Image (cartoon, rainbow over all chains, first blue to last red; front, side, top):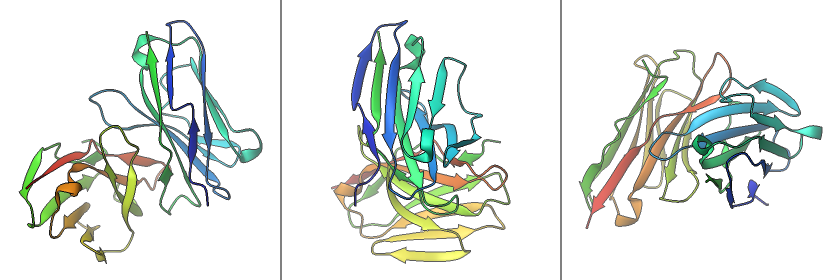
Length: 113
Length: 111
């Protein structure tokens, strides 16, 4: 069974450009989480989907970040326009329910120059 | 108080000894607790998942949960150099169902 997959694995963009990250959760997992780790800091929660609905988006830094999960399957996280401080590793995780373990994708390393 | 707290380390442990990693959390109603291992440049990998008070053992790993003290720990027996990594404690917060991570503890097993 495939795990959580993320695309791309790396992205280097210029400040002001737009980038879209994609996450494919484990099949059947209703819960999908986005996290970010900037250099030297801890993993920070961004938002939580239950199926296609945003359960909690309290961790989204600002309105330059937009997450979607149309149809309750894969999710995208768009950053527009990107700023230098957006650089970091963006992780996606999925779980069957909120009380079961969450499995992580390999992450997308975003570098904004 | 931070929601999930860990000592950032580094924690140095001789090979073959027991490594003890600790974590405290603020939300008394939290239900589920996770330990992840993260090697440099890699994604977090789930090691243990615990939700009942007491001990849960899996191979060389033992997770201990004390909800009254809001404390969860991870013991690694017979530490190996390959155990050297950052260990992340994660807690499923009861109030809003999101999973919050601690900063992680860097563990270094000395050969």
